[in-house]
Image (cartoon, rainbow, N blue to C red; front, side, top):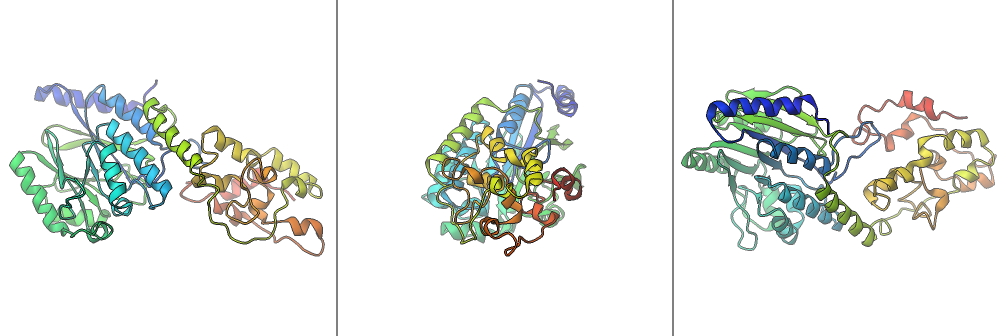
Length: 420
């Protein structure tokens, strides 16, 4: 495997720092989090980035060369459905296998309830932690974590959001920070904070507590390309959806060599984590989540071939487009029965009479005419009396949004599918 130059440079720099300290292996800190249910790369932008199987490949490679401290700043999932519970289990298995040093419990994950968190804690080898709630007898969860170099605090600036779904008592952030700083001093270790909070909250904490050496915060934006420090404290975020990880070196007194590592296709899928993902997708299919999606009333659909009886040129353009293979591309990745993915690859998934399966609704598989134009069965019967509404590039953004297709240029893409 050919590794990006920045990865090799990072480890090389860490080795040089380590030799002066006479330690066996350099320490590299890898930071991830805010995966929010995105277990695999998602979207139409090439190359697609992200995915826990790529992340595992990267971490394991570093672990073979350096001492890796893996920090996970929470938010495994964004909801609390049965599918979210399955996602959280796959993620817990992954970070347990990667020997994460700490996983910060987020308000989103707390909504999975006591049973869900007990499952996560078991699968991740008891690495889930939070200092934001008073101890709960039924939930064995640490307030903080410890490695040879670091005392790791895991807190939320809104602890009530973690306490409420668990029936626990919240601990104010100020008290939780004081406790981790006291603990770090007693262990003669560097205090690190995994924060369920945004950049402004992280800045405020850095100013108030300059003893902290690192704060990992949450952000809806991508990771900054350059490092941010407030005094001696470095502030970092992995961004959303697990598209990138952050790597830092630690020389025994300070963090350095800040790198954002996009998880692009040069990182092949790790075999072990791929098995976790395969089991997850098998359970999603077996659970029939796609069949149980709520559906809204709608006009009846016709299917693209019916549209083509009058719009032959448009049908020809469609058949030569990637839209015509939309479901096949998803099936090739193993997500053909995953409701998180299918809606943007078929016609009318959430509508009565829309796509349900290839066997039952073959004419509605793939991204068809009615994905953009809307249901057309009645128009096909009375084309002059029942006109279809005109559409423009605004129809694209239902699926090609900032989350799934960052950098999507509607004007350029429209040229590829334009038809009359």
